[in-house]
Length: 195
Image (cartoon, rainbow, N blue to C red; front, side, top):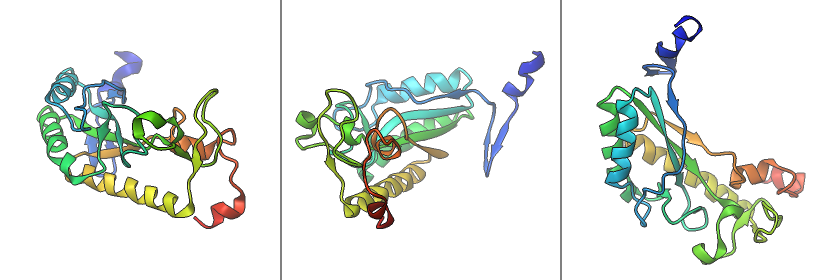
């Protein structure tokens, strides 16, 4: 094995011991139910990856604020307690294989499609996040604080459902990324100070 010896060694992250350093990163599957619930097909899909030896599986992004934060018709949701039971079934199944599991939390922001969410997409400011994209509505300070709370509540639901960790999605032109980039954020520093 030589230089790859550590690949199969456990990794301690706070109180969580990942059995090896093989990580399945989050990627969309389109297996979620149209309601946003974890499907049994989904559970089988992730179980096969655990059986294959992954030490950590990070489940694809779950919406924290529906419908404004939704990025697709088959996206997982964690914005309501009713999604906890199927998520628990998933974590219970994965843990049987000595694999750790995390879930990615997300808000689509300006990447949401207006016709699908039946409202104007929201973002850091009124700058589209891609060429030809819809012009989003800038979030108010109160709305920003509410979305922050939505992330916290989704993380708590993930904990209750048995996930070992959460990952906050900050890329791919979704809401947090829209706040981080001057290409999609022209808010004034004074407005940021109120948050």
